[in-house]
Length: 166
Image (cartoon, rainbow, N blue to C red; front, side):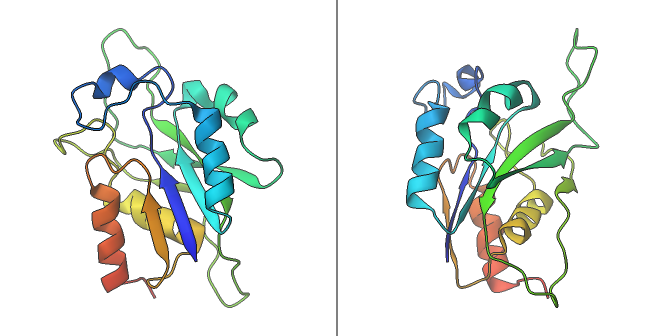
């Protein structure tokens, strides 16, 4: 199977990545989701931010899309922000169907943010492994990371291919 993961700059946050070599300004999320739907019928996942939830969710195909959650027990706290941004929505569409013998995967994961990975928003290994389980990915599948950024997802995927969970 062929899956995709998209972790673009979140709406209104592209300026945080202006020094990255792949910087292309604000992402057209409607076009991105249309691409995910068209090119990845086996399944895909899209990370976003809690403030963007009301804008991004209507762009996803109902009733096929699930909203999962990444809870961040350790998150960065910003001066002047009185309510921490300690969770993010992850939109998931499709994925491999599980058999009755396979474990059920929770629709949330708790994993602390990464620090000093060279790029704001680099995903932690625990998040990536959870994401692969959510999609029902197997080592012989293909995972296309549409916004490779720090390379954390690709490294986690390579590790998963070498040592999948039982």
